[in-house]
Length: 111
Image (cartoon, rainbow, N blue to C red; front, side):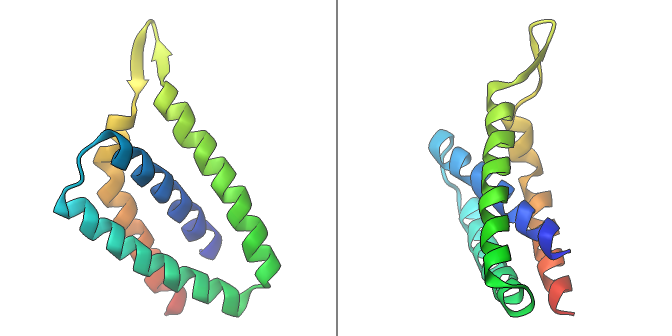
């Protein structure tokens, strides 16, 4: 569960970075970012307490690269017959679900 939560954190941060560059920040997104920041601190504290620090570091680097590639591929777009099938705007719509998933998983780590 720790590894999946850590991966979701990096995907969220990459999407949030792209969203900040392309869209206007609203109080809802600022609140989401603060919640995720607290959850990420909790996940890293858990990881550093239960897993070797170098494994957490290596996984963070790996997940950073993978999430950057995934979000970049979505930004470029998946096209079928010249029409985008899955764009970054659809990702923005599921960002609250990702936020909820990260919060629930980070709480689940400590329970």
